[in-house]
Length: 184
Image 1 (cartoon, rainbow, N blue to C red):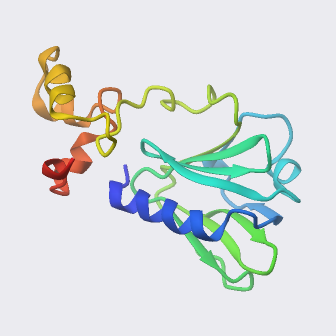
Image 2 (image 1 turned 135 degrees about the vertical axis):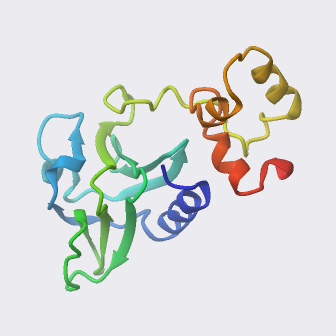
């Protein structure tokens, strides 16, 4: 799973650059990474639509596409996004690419092919495994010392298992490894 700072950076840059940009081309170079939760193809749904809100939900990067769809990406260990020119050479790790209006291209790269990208309706994320099971966000206002004590009190497993359990907290282990727990 990508580290929290990596995900926050990807969402921050995407949120500044993508909203309002129309998709003129959609390419799938590595189909093993893409899962469609809707009828049709990636091209059918995306071409002509504009990117919308970009956000993070646990370890997922969520990119709005048009009014009714979202691209939900779980980058795992090696997945990453790249904004580049359309005429730049394709990387070996290229999985998906979206040609944007006014030039440029958004690419999803994953040299380990561990990550997955799900095209799903905004109203139904049942096709995205683990999306609804994400626990409390450790960087949110709702995550307090009392809340942490309450969650730990009912657990009887090892500390490492608790820290990495995404259903309890969204990967508290990622926050702890970065030394941010004291700030949360």
